[in-house]
Length: 294
Image (cartoon, rainbow, N blue to C red; front, side):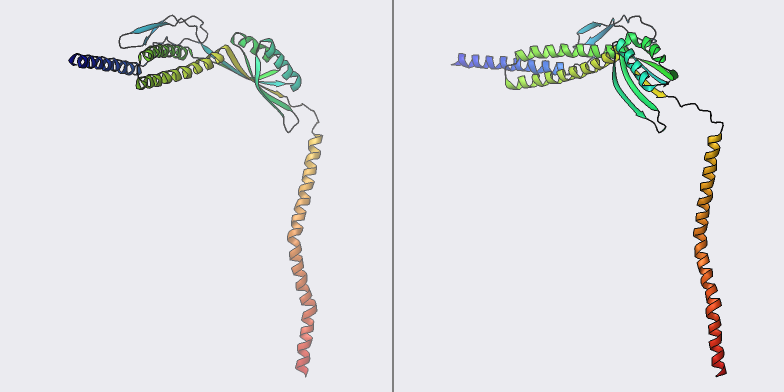
């Protein structure tokens, strides 16, 4: 009986110790956070050399992994042009052909007619980065360029940092999966799975940001505004003179009507006063004189 009791106590101690190890290991992995990456210094947009550095990523108390960051410079390129054209429809068709030849596409377009009957339109196009400058040169031939702006945003540092953080989170996820296989009760399984879901959520969020950056890096964005020019006419001023004369005539008639509107009530009052004075007053005087004679 004593031997059986000793064996039961020994097994209970081993189980408690194993559960404590798993809980401690989950807490240790939960506390792991990526160390901020040592990034290369930003380079001018015209330089195309590669960044040759190695960046440590913390995955444990005394365990480091070095990620190769031999990454080309990541630039998001944008441009906007405002172009005056003779024929809007023909110019917009030429713009679309330029985009299609460069393996790009029109992501957004909007056209309308102004009050003067002139057509205008705004286009947003996406083209491969290596075709960026050549496409702009072709678009400039469509008409007269009135304004032009180009810019480049260097996102190399952010891109490398995102890669390093994802790498670190994937290693944490792998260790959590290993600990999940060692769990021997429901509480431990739920705790480890909760940590796995958290890490997986962060990985997906960072992956989505990387996909967005890669799309913007691979395809440059160009905004193009096309508008028809105002027609040039020579009327020698005769048309303007007739217009001015007509406007003056209308102004005079308008003033006369306003004057009549003010004068009519006054004339009515004057007429009433004259009638009273010329018709009623003599009768009243005769009536008074007749009474006096009586």
